[in-house]
Length: 179
Image (cartoon, rainbow, N blue to C red; front, side, top):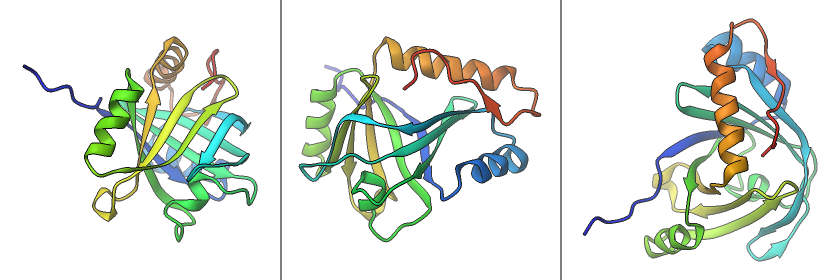
């Protein structure tokens, strides 16, 4: 019998203070781009340690090969997974993202491995996520992102934009079905 594993790590996420400056640095210094920006994302549901909150964040996404880079800028002081975990970090690496085709099973697997869910959310467009804290050895959080047609379409469009990128534009129009 084959053991069901978590999906591969598909995303590295970084917290930044200035989204547009960070995009300029990623595109000019590391040739990653173009970035699609989702400005001031809101959530239908968002909770940290069981407490409902309403943070406002902007997100930027681009691909380098099959690896997605996410940049996150927080616009308020509301309690959020970015502000709360890890609590001393202002900028830099924040989490790895893993696509999940079965959120309950993957959440059970992470809990059984000793990771603790610290946040969960559902975006305005219905994208479901859960964040797990696993200790300092992991270097950050683990985010499960529920796979559905919308997420698949969004990620594939971002990959196509990166594959076709001429290296001169910083921004791409967010694909239809924003995450």
